[in-house]
Length: 295
Image (cartoon, rainbow, N blue to C red):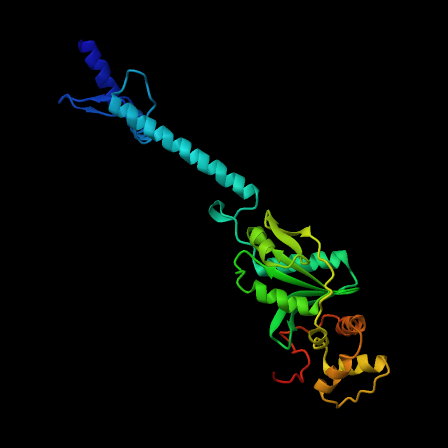
């Protein structure tokens, strides 16, 4: 016994890192013991914050129920995460919700589609119709005069019936380009001769998908067609057919003379006039027939 005390005293006198034993019986922890205690405390806190495993027969029914609820929550979170990832793969946006396809996106995709289909075509945007009473979203001019009305996801179809009359008065072919959500409603509102395309989004990219071809319009309003031309274009069209037309003539007189020409001839002259502009002037830059008369 005394030998043991002597050995302990010897360790203390030598300044050893081991435990010191003093005469009062108090034990001071060594650095190694303190580290072990800190590690044990950290492990205990970690186990306390982690979900408890369900052990058969080890917990009370209340604890088992709580653990089951926690497991169900984890499964729900897992399902939501999987759904979010799947929607992201399909082009979804934040929080797994796909952004609506808007007019500028459809417009860009449509113009790219038309240029790829007919590289020589001249494209207009927001071309005024019926002396400014309406506008055509996109117009393609080449071998025919084609109008395109755009209906994005956020657009209303309330004015579509009026727009069908405006387009039908001036274009040889008319097509409506819609977000898929409008497809069924649009079919019921537009004339049978109108074409249909959908603007479909995939991974953030909008594609134009033809659904129904347009038929040639045989009920064009020649007056509406003529008024797509500016004054100087009316003069050139008349002179091309041997009709005298002065540069300073009233535009209303020029229109009256053009009305005497066959519809096919008027269509050809309008196409030539618009192609000569090369699509460089739109409604936002200049009004058609800057000398239009009030109604």
